[in-house]
Length: 417
Length: 149
Image 1 (cartoon, rainbow over the protein chains, first blue to last red):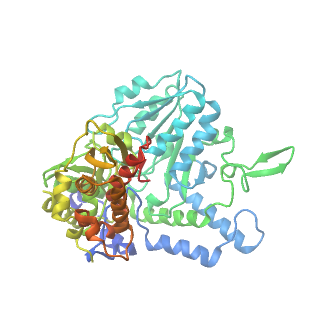
Image 2: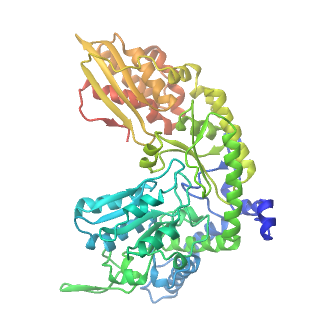
Image 3: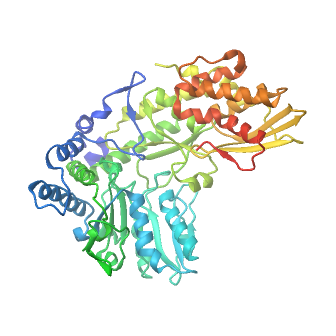
């Protein structure tokens, strides 16, 4: 950490202070201090987020966009204030481009339903990569089944990187109607070259959806600089609440898309001869939204902004290097996902112990990791493993956490060695 | 605090590492496949049943130590049993893993009792019951693979 920060002459990330902001971290599991290394599944919440949600319910709770009373105006201001924070956070051009959803999965399904669904025909193709999360596979499979279009999959290398030449080969100016790819792989940690991918697709006027679920808490995102047409992410992987997420989409695309769901908030007028839709982004927000969730997400973004994501990225990179060295040194360990550019995810298997057994044993040492297929079964199949153990980092993790993981893995060795 | 050794007893680790009756049995009269989609554990179970008695039994598959040990110990316990004895064993075994109040009926369970520690780990009960569910499917000659989900 000190090496990285002194090179860039930035103040170091104050991890002790960050840890103090997360009340959940200060507890014992089986008599050992909790070491939370399952941030790829969900991140923990700082006190400021917990307080924001609590304050919203204690002081401002009401429905949005409809009341004429003071509470409704406050709730609406809270909710729309959160949208403005999201716009600033990902550098969108307008708040009209920020649609609140339940999470990344719903955001992708929205695009499948309202953007691609109506225009997809037999013979068309959707291009994804082999390392996608199920949420960025299945919505497209469902569309293909309905339309007769074909899902094309860019292969990945043994290191877990997109084989770029294959991407170029599979990108068809005539047939590809959408490229959908993850910014950071949840199973492998690979940071994909999405700038390059977007440029190549745009050269043929093919829109690109980026699944940013694993990226937003770990590296700065600028949707305009990237040129992303759609960018989806979840609040709960960004220190915010579950049940709230974001679809960013360019306004020109949202304008021509039909609504996703029908109901309250998304309509302007309703009559039995036909209804008209509300303006953007409300056209895509049917029903009373997750107001408290949006408020919590806004507070989470404030929190991340107070840290400086560039510093977080450098810190986590250094911590990942340390973790990779220490875990590899245990022996009997095979890393799954060794890309040149990685975010804080360490996926591995052990010769003598199944990931599920590893997960249970390290849990007994207070260390929370994920064991399983990580909703990326094709990745498991690609690497010839039924599952992996995965440690995933966040800015509140330390070298002590990694040392605790290593000690816990040595315990696995003792039992199964 | 429960001890990890209650879960991973030597016998469990030994059977997990070197499962007994680990083979596709030929010929066989009954078979079924089981799958735990959560962790990818899968087994195929084969039985040769003559005159209502399990003459021989074997399994193949892959999974965690708990699922492999459970399948291995189960196959050892079932050889020579009648179908109704096998079903009773399954019920006692399932009861041991899901019923927190009662002490395991070690007499009835025999060597399967070493897996009683699993009941302290709700997320692992599915690993320990995969083989049992597959047995049930095989006895009813179900064509459809069973899953723990």
